[in-house]
Length: 146
Image 1 (cartoon, rainbow, N blue to C red):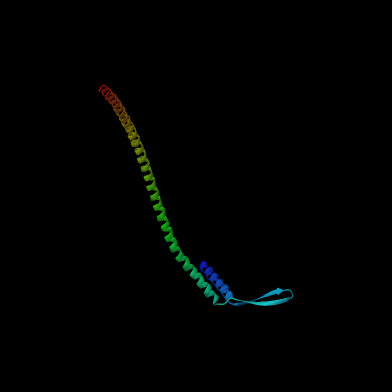
Image 2: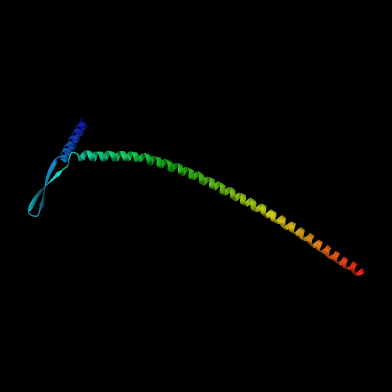
C-alpha cells in the first residue's frame, strides 16, 4: 500500500499546484525606492484553451502519422519499383550488348563477302574490257581490210 500512498500524495501535490496556478497571486517588484505591486492571474478559462490546443495538437499529430505512414508505404513501393526498373534496365542493357556483338560479327562476315563479290565483279569487268578491246581491235582490222 506504500505505492498507493505515494501516488495519492503526488496527486494531492499536483492538485495544490494547479490550484495555485489558477488563483490570483500578488508579486512585488522593486524599482528604485518604490515598491510596485503587480497582479498575476491565471484565469480558469485559459486552462481549457490550453487544454484544447494540446488536444488539437495531439489530434493533429495522430492525423499526421496516418499520412506519414501512407507516404512511407508509397515511398517503399516506389523504391521496390525503382529496383525492378533498374534490374530490367540492366537486363536490357546486357541483351543489347549481346545483340550488338552478334550484329558486329554478322556485319564483319557480310563485309568480307561483299569484298569478295566486288573482287569477282572487278575481275569480270576486267575480262569484259579485255574482250571489248580485242573486239575493237578485230573490228579495226576488218575495217582496214575492207
